[in-house]
Length: 231
Image 1: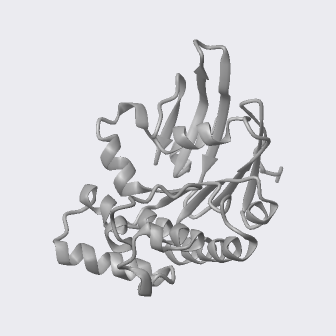
Image 2: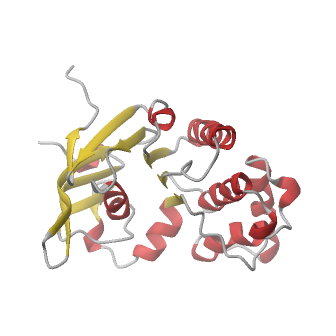
């Protein structure tokens, strides 16, 4: 039997249903992710990929089963907001940047749930992260003043605001053209290696999947191939 403590993140027989139990969005998934590992989750639309990502990131709770982080069950935690803010970075297809805030201010938003920093320290850290993703010269711009590719890079900088150990990305290149998609993929690869991040990415893109250490394939709410190979 697999020990959840052997993984950074481990889902044990997790299930999520909707419409009074008629729709099995996630149906008995068991999946582990180790420190520093890159995992791509693929499958047809509606197979449960994004629902599974939400369960793994504690954005939603499973109806059955358990998600463990460093061997500890998330269901027993009362500080899930703080857990998400300090341990997990999220990158979404639609960016979810706040339109009235500048890039620098958007990156600082998660910091209010992280370790206590002064206003000057938050601004300095945000500027450093924007430089890291090639957006240092655009820190004072609002989302409407940025291109789609630039917005995704700001969203990536925001995901790194509290130095997470796990990065969850839901179709991070879905709204990007091929040139910008390649830049974001290069950034994700670079940041994962430099920061020893575990990366779990939901994608339809073969280009994204081929960069992962392991590709997990889903169908009808189940994992049909977890990407591992017999020794």
